[in-house]
Image (tube, rainbow, N blue to C red; front, side, top):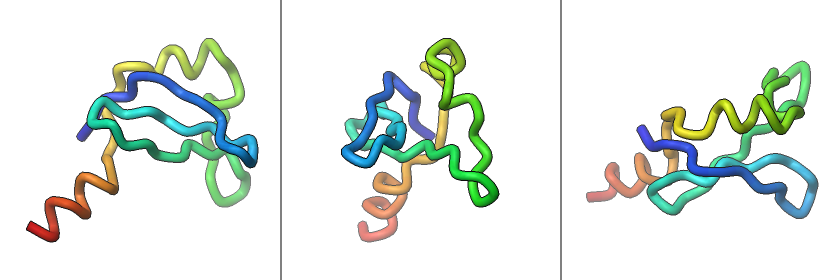
Length: 65
């Protein structure tokens, strides 16, 4: 688990979480596949800073060790 330290938009306009490990993870609100209405509001995104989420890149690195 890694903590969210900020957000930015990618070149396609999707929100990307910046993690404390240095990796990133897309946080898409793309109904009906992904329901993350909180990413559409700056105040809701700010409330998620410090929250822990899985880092798929760190998990992949750990699996290859």
